[in-house]
Structure formats: C-alpha cells, structure tokens
Image 1 (cartoon, helix red, strand yellow):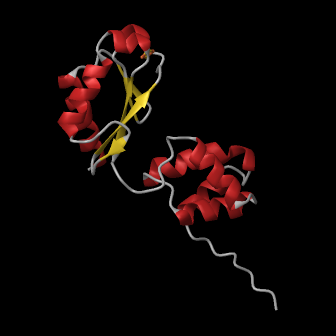
Image 2 (cartoon, helix red, strand yellow):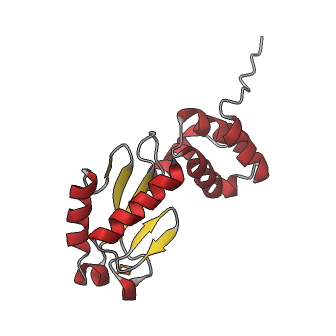
Image 3 (cartoon, rainbow, N blue to C red):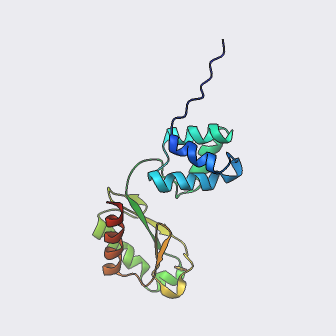
Length: 159
Ligand code: FES
C-alpha cells in the first residue's frame, strides 16, 4: 500500500510558491516573501516549499543556513542592520552599535523580543554614514537619537 504524504503544512508558503510558478530557481524570492510575511521560516513552511518546488529538504536547509538574513525562529519584530564597514566606522558606527546595544538591551547579532541588531558590511550609503537598514529601508547619518526614532517607527508599524 502506498501512502501519499502530500499535506500542505503552511498555506501561505504554498500560495507564495504557486505565485512563483513552483519554480525552484525562484527559491530565494519565495523564502524572502514568506519570511517578510511571517517573520521567520518555520519547519512547516520549509517542508511545504521543498515539496512544492520538488527539491530536497537538505537543499532548502543548505540555502537557509547559508544566508544569515533568514530566521528560523520567531523572535524580534525587525532587525536593525548597522553598517560597520570602513566608511561608516570612520564616522562612528562602532559607537552607534554600542549605544544601540544599550538602548535595546540586545547584543549585536542577537535579538530581543522587539529588536534585533545585525552587522552589515557596506549598505551602499557610504557618504551618509553611519548607515542603517531596516526592512529594506535605508537610513543615513544615524546617531543614537535617530536609531531610537527609527526603532519606534518600525515598532508602531508592526503593532
Ligand atoms: S561603508 Fe557603510 S554604507 Fe558603505
């Protein structure tokens, strides 16, 4: 007797795959869309995507673990990516990181309930450093007061 385990564990992930024609070469866009909506990539979402795109779970886990922006656990509502490449360091990126860690009570590359902090290495905004990226929105000349305002704005959007 053959048993078909063809259940859809994550309806949203299934819809996104369908929107992308169930094409495996659109895996990154699909993962991005699911994470953007759900905040992280659950086991169920990954199994659903693997099945829809007809790729192995090992393959999808390899991709997700390669790109550090993909989150496997529910956590912070958003991540503040702070550039610490040369030009931003020259205008105070490291001080900004220290201030942000104190302000949000999280460590760089760690996350709290609301905010996570991650290092970035050049966001293409070198003339306006320190640069910060949140949900694909880029901010320049960020200082302690501005990063606090940016976080407040994104928290308000998420509530
Ligand atoms: S060095 Fe920070 S944006 Fe380029």
